[in-house]
Image (cartoon, rainbow, N blue to C red; front, side, top):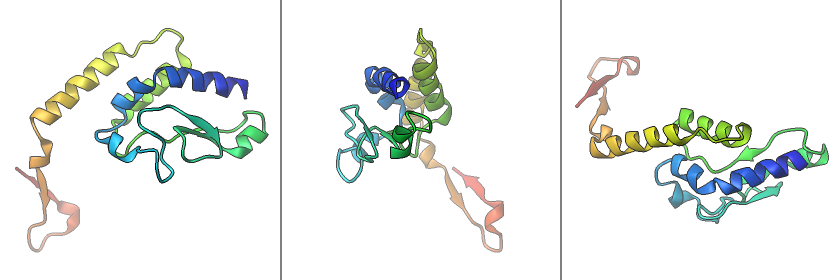
Length: 136
């Protein structure tokens, strides 16, 4: 369990950075209520779904052998950015995340200025859902 506790300390120090990459409007769902942790505060607990990281009771029972669950990422994340920042935090002693964060921030700015939401999927008559077309 010492390894997991050390890992949680690393994640706690970079909580704000992680939250900036963990999905747009994630602060609206991570309120600290209804089995969600608070967006503002990092926490980890054994068997508690109301924390940022949940450590299953079996993992605790087996002295850290098992898995941990990061409950912070939203469903609209960039999986490459999130995987990169988690790997950077967990495995690399000297952070290499600056270019990743800069690129992600630039991309989000582009998306907000040029909304992709203008594109919508339509289904012409007599056509299956497997042949969807993009229209602008």
